[in-house]
Image (cartoon, rainbow, N blue to C red; front, top):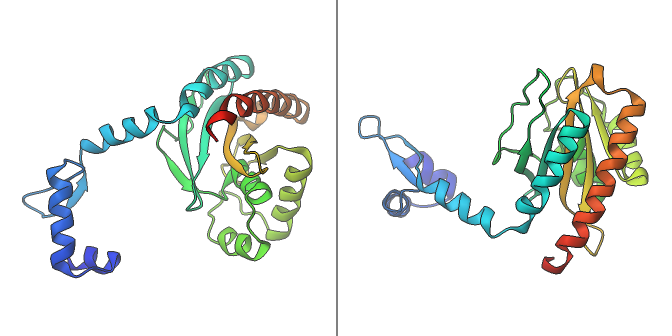
Length: 225
């Protein structure tokens, strides 16, 4: 309890009151023996309610399914949050013999992988801010800051980004942004496949397909921006 109170900047009695309310609402649960807290089943209802109020998951799902079938890749619809996180809101898995360790609701630091380059290119943060966040990213095969900056600039020019083997060895990820009326990133479409099956020509064609889908989704989402 003292640890929770300290992390939240609260006195223990206030933290205890908040936890009791959360337990009552079934958002968290407490183990009677260990006194440890964990997420409760009420979080599922809360998450479902949030998802249902967003047009993006329902609009993007058929797009993800279509791209996954055509290219034999896994696809994701990702939201970029104000707290510099990416959240997977929709997913379509590939039929190829590899499994991407991600599920709907998975959260990641916003600068990782292909989406991270797009966030850096279209998120409006300064290089000073980006460098600080970049140094906290964990890569399977670390990339230098200089090389990453070049890839961010390339993403800004081309409108898409590619992560080949750096975030996950043997996996290539291709991402495109969905931008608001001010040109700032809100969501991304991401395709992931085995690097051995995605050569440069295929990546280029896949990126162009994703870009076309993204522009159409931007039009559908524009009334609710």
